[in-house]
Image (cartoon, rainbow, N blue to C red; front, side):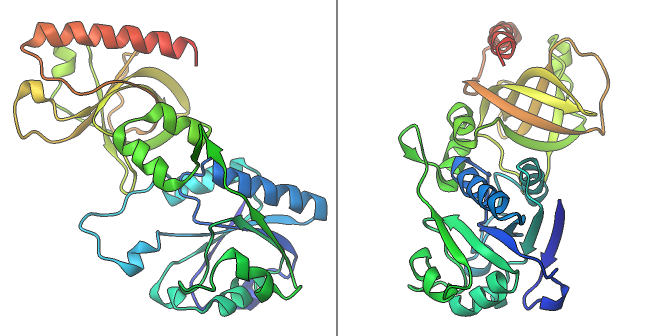
Length: 313
């Protein structure tokens, strides 16, 4: 898959003069609704005998329009998004830098530069997709008028999962609430984050449950506090285990938030390894125990639940 970064204004001469079917969207999460758009575009590209291209953005539009007290986090950072798009069979991805200059571009000019300019024979997007400067004429209902017969417009209807709209907003709510089971149905696959294995306090080892402490990659959105069934990828191989996101409240107040993963039947030292985490199932919330014995008993229950779940994955 070819990845081309565009900064507004870009030089149209750098774009290959070949027709494409162009799917458009931010695609954070690449959830069921996004997949409907991309798969519809893929079918159209196949029927026309042209390449499937995706136009997406390097960051959320709100970076330009509003102040944020904390750094933005994403369901899929750009590298993860590109991996998922490649898996879906996309040929070319145009990653557009979302800047103030781009945000001010009138919808008609956006069409000329980023649809006609990318040689789209058809543009495919969701029913709620917008483009160019935010105004009443930047929606899908006005796009055929801007196209003026130069390319086809294919609007993909709303996709529901379990009776609710498949949308990135809902996906973020599910992540924050720790509801990874419902989230994974919306994403059509397990939610995934990444990070580096770092040193922790080694308390897990004392209890017979040694943990890999994960420093999460910047920009990634962690599930809410709780205990989960997970898999951890190390050097291309996946291992089952259970994870705790929380503050280790049993051992004191005002502690830092940590991500700790106990891997089953695993005894290697993996400090410094770059890893990926699949979040499969929420087990319980964080609890404060009266002592080490009570915590160990609960960990044994968590392990039993996790092993049963993983045996069916």
